[in-house]
Amino acid sequence: MSDQQYRVILAKLGLDGHDRGIKVVARILRDAGMEVIYLGLRQTTGSIISAAEEEDADAIGLSMHNAGHLTLGPKMTAALNDARLDIPLIIGGIVPDEDVEELLESGVAAVLGPGASAEEVVSTVRDAISARDET
Amino acid sequence: MKSSKETIPQLFEAALSGERRSLGKLLTLVERGGETADAVAGLAHQKAGNTHVIGITGAPGSGKSTLTGRLLELLSQTGQNTAVLAVDPSSPLTGGAILGDRIRMDDLTDENSFIRSMATRGHSGGLALAVPAAIQLFDAVGYKPVIIETVGVGQVEVDVAGAADTTVVVVTPGMGDAVQANKAGLLEVADIFVVNKSDRPGANDARRDLDLMLDLGHISGLEEKTGYRPPIIMANSLEGTGSQEIIEAIENHANHLKNSGSIKVRQDQRTLMEVQNRVELLIGTTAEETLSTEFGQATISAVLDREISPAQAAKSIVNSLLND
Image (tube, one colour):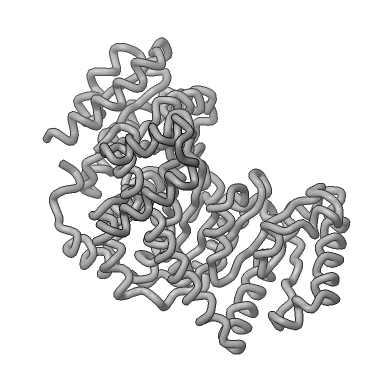
């Protein structure tokens, strides 16, 4: 499958209104040739799973700025596991360095911080998708 | 690999039994085009033919997605399995796209509805093939109605929406005067008009201009020919006003199609258009291949040297295809 056709879902999970960052990420991925399905604010694990199924998504990106990542990140990976959806989950936003390990252990594919460049964002998404495809 | 585990018939069987994820995967295959897509479309075609296709179209920002969300909500409440195909443009430069229609259809993750976003993906004729195939897929697995939402700019988009059983054209206040409304194009394919954002100034003017346009259709004899005058419905999709009226108007139109027998004409027309599009695409692809052969290159050189005209070159290339 060519890069051009990667379909990525972007969403904000739970109560978190900071959507400046995720809109920038949406644009970065679009300009890298990906199709971004933008769900916007106040999504639930259930609504994201439904969207991922209907849209046949290749990756899910969650933006978190409310310090809820250690609760919501593992909740999302658990929901994906329950639904038996093998789709890489990437978390972006404000995540302290010391929390990254715990998120990765819970099944999150990658974590992107505030300093990430456009190239980093794109390559992280691509790598996460190809890592899943190889398994 | 994510997509190669199940065969197409297996995925199709699963989708028929209501497995949403398989339907999602089949839609991806249909969208990707090529022989796999043709195989999926072939299976779907056998089982299709029962749904009612509603096209919703209008200028960017006119509120199509929000309106679609409202209709979906009402249809789901009455237990109708409704599918939505929301088409958004791909970037001609990078091929990327932001598919943002779902954001307007919040809180609609119930079991009765299925929303799929589709990018136009620039490749020639791609949308014209993928959309009918996706509609048939929804049709085959039992979604009724199927709503297709497209921006009403570009011939393909107008064609796609115009090929629906019922086409809803969404306009907003300030769209232009009565002369605009009488120009040929998008407004002509409407079976139902919705003046959305009806709380805005100028909403009644928009309604009047559309009404005047329809009056002229009455005078010119068009209305008599079709036996139908498109209703104009004032709506405010953010508030949800007008949605119920639109559903009723769609039902009325569906009844009109049934009683007048034009439903069959429309559906036949749609099938014809699909075959035509496929023929064009096949010929186009073969012709493009021919251009890179020795014969094709020689023909192009002859045009460049001004020995033959572009029209003669095109004819000789097409003739060579037919003689193959």
